[in-house]
Amino acid sequence: MDYLLKTEPTTYSFADLQREKSTLWDGVSNPVALKHLRAMKPGERLVIYHTGNEKSAVGTASVVSVDASDARNPQVKIKVGQATAKPVTLAEAKANKLFADSPLVRQGRLSVVPLNEAQFKFLTGE
Image (cartoon, rainbow, N blue to C red; front, side, top):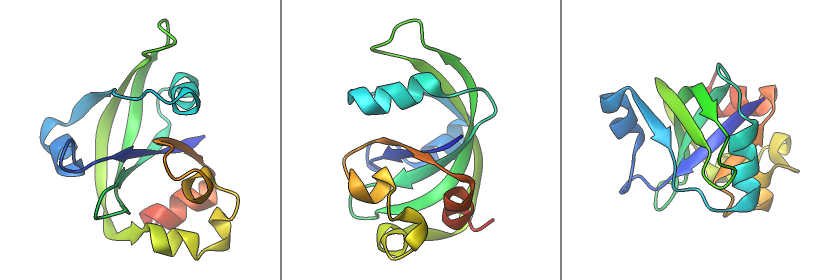
């Protein structure tokens, strides 16, 4: 499974992740988003998505480790991947039938969104 992680770039941006190389992904409180974090496995691919004024997929990362022993605060360590060749906007995703049933467009406030292979490739330009 691949996932999309949403972040407000004024709080923590993809550039911050590039500078730090890895981080602990936290600050998630939605029960569905927490379920997705707990389900992550090392090596799974991630899309980093900027919320706010940008509303676009801007880079990739991968899961390094997951400690889900505290169900309310899973510890997911991620490492940076690369910037997308061009940001893919929410409007572009909404216009693509690949996302018709995706929580990305159906549950706009969900901060951790599962992606299938085709969605991952569309968002990353792979």
